[in-house]
Each structure stands twice: as C-alpha cells, then as structure tokens.
Image (cartoon, rainbow, N blue to C red; front, top):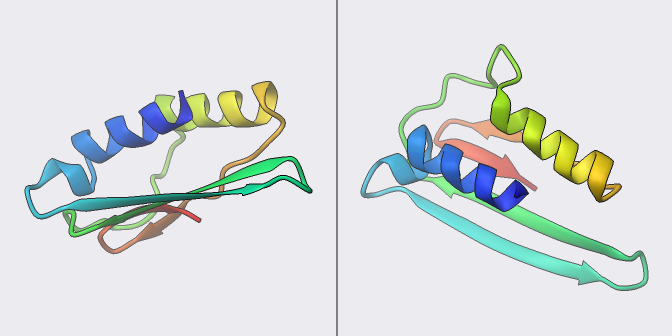
Amino acid sequence: MAVHELATNAVKHGALAVPEGRVLVSWLLDAAAGQLRLHWTETGGPPVPGAPNQRGFGTRVLDTTLRHQLGGHAELRWGPTGCAAP
C-alpha cells in the first residue's frame, strides 16, 4: 500500500507526471534488524516548492500502513525535482 501511494503521487504530481521524470527504487533487507529499507528517489519531475503545507490522504496512508500496521516509519524529503524517501 505504501509503494502504491508513492507511485500514485509520483504520477499525479511528481516525477512520473512528465515524460522525462524518473523514479529510482532500491531496497535493502537488514535481516539482523528485521527491517526492509526502501529508498524511493524521484528526479526530472516538475519543480517542487517544498514540503506540502498539509498532510494529505497519501501521507496518512503511508503513516498508517508503515507505523501502525508494520511498526516502521517513513522519512520523506522534498527536493527540487521530487520526493525522496531515503
């Protein structure tokens, strides 16, 4: 669900909203810590003025899915050409 929300946002507002936009997804399984670390980086998208002023539906879904259902968290950074979840 979390990846779906990131992808939906990228298509509607981010890097995937323009033909030259790209999304790089990588992950690392940290078996010792019992964690999956997902890295999502958007480039080439329309200019991003900064982090949104309000938490939207997608942010609430990310928080609910990751924090409450999986015991994890999301760290979103808003760069000049898109969102990054390092």
